[in-house]
Structure formats: C-alpha cells, structure tokens
Amino acid sequence: MKRTDMIEDIAKVVSDMTPKEGYSDTHLSEVSLFRAENNYLDIPLLYNQCLCIIVRGSKEVSLKEKTLTYDPNHFLVVPTIMPFECETYATHDNPFFGITISVDYIIVQDILDQLGEKFTASSVALAPNPGAYLEELTEDILEPTLRLLNSLREKKDADVLGRQTLRELYYRTLMGKNGHILASAARGKSSYAKIAKALRIIHEDCSASLDITNLAEKANMSVRSFHDHFKTVTTYSPLQYLKRIRLDKARLLLANQGLQANVTAHMVGYESTSQFSREFKRYFGYSPKDTQKEFLQNLVR
Image (cartoon, rainbow, N blue to C red; front, side, top):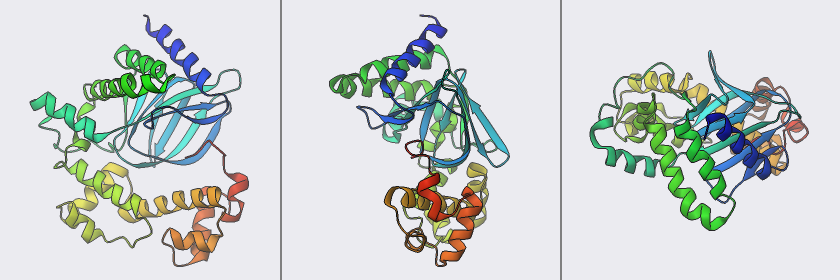
C-alpha cells in the first residue's frame, strides 16, 4: 500500500472514531484520538511520555526558544513529561486528526534487553534540548499504526492484537534516527533517565517544597550536574519547571472540580493566594475564577 493511501486510511478511521472535537478514548488506555476543526493558538499543555502522530493538519509545540512542528510527514516523540506551548492548525473542511500513544517503559526496556548491545552507549552526552524530538513518519510507522487503529474497533482485538502492535511501534521508534534518546530515557542509569525520574517525582507531588539537593541525591548527581542536565532536558530550571507544573495542575482542578482559587492554590503548593492568582493570569491570560468559562472543554487533558 502506498504511503498516501495509508495516511488516508488512518484519517478515515480516526474520523469515524472521533464524532466531535476533542479527545476520544479507545479500548486501550495507552491510545487516545484527537480531532480539531479550528485553530487553537498559544495553548499551554502538559505532555506525558508519548508518541504523537498526525495524519491531517499540523501542530507546533514550543519549549522556550525551541519549536517543533509535526504533521503527516513527521511524528513527535516525547520521552518524558514536558510542558509545551501548543498551536493546532485545522479548519472545519480540513480537520486535524491525531493519535497519541503513551510510552510504556517496561515494554521499551524489554525490547532493549532483546536488542542487546545496540543501545549500550545511550548514556552519552545529551544533544541540546532533547526533551522531545521528531522522527520521519515512514511506512514502518504508518503500517502498524493503521493495524493498531483497526484493532481498536473491538475490545478483544485491542487487548490481543493492539497490545502486540504497540510493542512493534515502540520498536520502530527505537530504530529511528533519534531512537537512542528514547532508549536513554528507558535506561535507569543514564543521565536522561535520572532526570526523567526527577520529573515524575515533581509531577506526582508538585505541592511539596522543591528540595533540589534531595532530588540530586536521588538521581546520584551533584547539585550542579543535576541542574545542568535538568535544563538540558527541559530548557527550564527546576524552580521554573515546578511553577509551570503547579499552574497546569491548578487549571485542571479549577476547570474540572470548580474549586475556589484559595483552595486550589493550597492544593498545588502555593502559600499565597494573591501570588497564585497573579502568576496564573500572567501564564494563561485569564484569572482563576474565569477558568471554567475560558477552558477549552475536552480539548485539554
């Protein structure tokens, strides 16, 4: 099957499975589908470790001075939790169709063990800003993606065939031009993996005070080395990253639970409600009390 035909077939399946704008769940928790029919600009989003494939439309994700554009020619690989500024380009007549696939590092590690020596040098010095990267969207990725989507029509097929195909997609990504970055994130002893672990700690308990010395010790790094590697991966200092994670989590709490600003501020680790409100408005462009009105329902997770 030609590449263009595979892209059209994938787009048709995604269209069938996404009856309205926003995210749609599937029979596999690792796979979600996304449809947009309008441009959505300057939207701050938090990406968990994932593969992001687009077959119609395009999307830009930015980390400070670095911008990556993925589309039907390139897919995005996010090896660890990353906060992005996002812009999605679509129209009603030409909607955006995307597939997000969570990365299961237990499976990735098992694949690496099978591959043996190929990725033993994954802990080499990191390339600049490798918190996310692009790979070419080749037939080697498109063909299993189409099989994966077709398996999602029935739960029993998803549980058996779909999970097998996820493993194949992880393998194909590892074999890509920049696959060593994903491999490095999976290897527990690499600097990348140590920073990825620290990011998960911050993400899971963002209300706690940030103890850089303690995080560095858990990563078995000096404070200076930890700070340098952290900024290489995320482009943020640890304190800047924590602030962004707190604000992203606060927005979800305000939108989904309708909490008051003072309660939300405390839940994400702010001692001052006024400081929280100032920083929230500076970051999102609207106040905490306006979140439910401004929040793009079903378009942000």
